[in-house]
Image (spheres, rainbow, N blue to C red):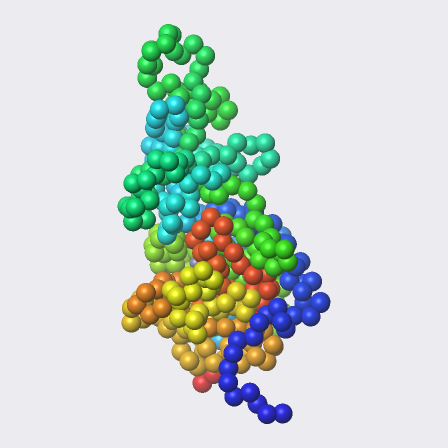
Length: 464
Ligand SMILES: [Zn+2]
């Protein structure tokens, strides 16, 4: 047979037989459940920790399966493989944080007829997408005595939700002629928390009692949760889109939901770690927080947490091996999403080097922007070894850049791993409506990304 000399990526739906489609659906259902439960970094890390501990992962590093969470916001896990640790790790790195609206430290403000929470947005959002939609509150409140009160309100049937009001079109004549950045101000992202006032608060018509709605809200909060206004100062409260993830389309071939960047990779990497055969290097995953705001902070990729974990792993598993050797021999996938070619805004992409929904996980050889600034760029040799691995196993894959040159760009955690000298490349599914309250991913890509991560963890990838 004549070899095809030209290249085109393979559609993952087209190559999926009935059995594979069933597996896609099954995995996607579990993913929808995961996505509906885990909307913050804390909830995601807790979910991951519980799943791993159930499967025998121990916080004692002398075991063959180990896990270490950090402050509920980052988590590292490793499993012994067939090859000794001196040959490095097969590592999957993803992030658990997602763009959202954080409450300010002094959030409560009384406005005409309502009390609102002032917010400071976290990560890259398009502000108008957060208006006039039901929001849920997730997070914690730390009381003066140190007690931690977990908060999740707005997800269950019958629970109230919260909302930022939007201007009616009749009064938006001036706003619609403004630029998007002028029209939607961060200081107007105020969430309505309550509206009523106490009975008899207004003695007579025209009476103007001070902050009656806020006063009533504080009374309700104190009665229900025993908290005061000062407790908000030591809280982490995040407003996220309310409600579960859903299948999208008549064919239910897409998953729609909040926080798929990058929980889709967290889910696929976790499942891969749990199910991979121990045939290659020792396997590890690291799930970081703070990626959306530059990876700084104790639980972000720029911190030393990952290094400390590997140092402890080497001490426990391979005492006399230099830690630097383990880092240098490690093969890593920075598991993060790529922007899918937007059907309505195709011109912002360079189509030949854009990711398509349904064509399998997408490699990004480099990230960064404007002349590859801020990128660690993977070696062609490492990329080549993965290309050959996936072709051998029949896993569809594709490759892309984030948008047109000089127009798009973005970063991932890859460069923080590359700093250790390891081989690292970005590989993850394409997502449409990225960073929006309702992101879209293909069920075919969820399945093929999980497969790709699993084959990577099982492989003995070499190159000289
Ligand atoms: Zn991401």
